[in-house]
Length: 474
Image 1 (tube, one colour):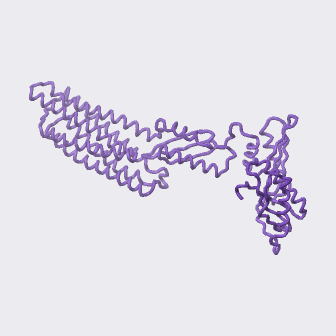
Image 2 (cartoon, rainbow, N blue to C red; image 1 turned 90 degrees about the vertical axis):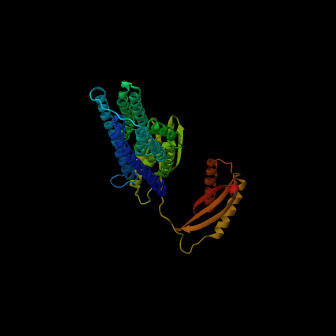
Image 3 (tube, helix red, strand yellow; image 1 turned 45 degrees about the vertical axis):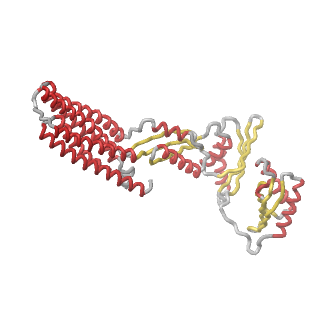
């Protein structure tokens, strides 16, 4: 998320939380006034409910301010848990309110009669409170959904219950008033029963909110999210298997740890690129902070040559030109091993022997491994002083190679021949255009043959390197 977007989110969440605090102050004032005028338990329960809502709104405002702060040294996962904790405190306050209302309702039903003084003013004030509740709940709900804020959602849930409980209290006072007007004594208990209904609503909402906040505090993964992420990651190219997906939530943020299996011959850069792609894919499912751990694995049906490359990579060795021959039930493997040019023969041979042992363990049957040792080549050479390019020899090599086109039908032409003298040795590089449809194995054989023919014709040449290219590149 961009800094400007984060700042706008923080400002809007704070405005919504501050509006909630202001609305709660108005509601507490109105309902406290009605308690003194009517003595209604329903109104008293609503006043207590709104008082705790005010406390909850203040906690929400403070938690939103803290939770939107960036991660720091002491809070590397951010401050999102403050939202979850504030919602947990609000749940406790709701339960306390409901228990007191239940106690007071049973006391009035069975032990102490309290005279209710209903009036038009009380009902009108409650309708005003109802309007404030509806407006505030809608504003909080919109902001909570927009920014996935659990603290604002909990606050919105509180005021949504206020809407229903206020309607119940209005009905309770109305029934008491009707009982006095029409002389129906049984209706005097309507107020206490209304209080019990309010308490039931509070407990129901509190249980839902409590479960959600407790799940967040205990890092319970959202239902189905792990499976959704696992399926999406498993379908990505380069992922052999999804070993584990872990999801935790802090406020409106998710943290995802993904452990995946990748081909053991993949390079570090390939694995890094795959990890970036996995992070992006998970971010499309749920905005989150993602950590990807890649485990090297042998793909099902892995080719022997790939397995040989894997064991050499594990030892940090560079190899090329792997070949294999199956004869009389025995496998013969040959390859070239590149070692540090400063090594002695003893040390280089030890590396080759250890690699041979690893390769033999790849198969249970008889296997003979032969390794050609050559210098890795880290030094950048420079042409001999004053030698420059040998243009006359370059033209002779180009003319000779092009004359081989009749013998090697794959060859179209030879060009860009360069001859240099490096460390008292003559080295040649050139480009050969060949037919585009040729298999690369065939091209390799032809270039190797051409290199040998050039060296045979010009014995002073130490090395020839041919770059093959398709016809359309010319």
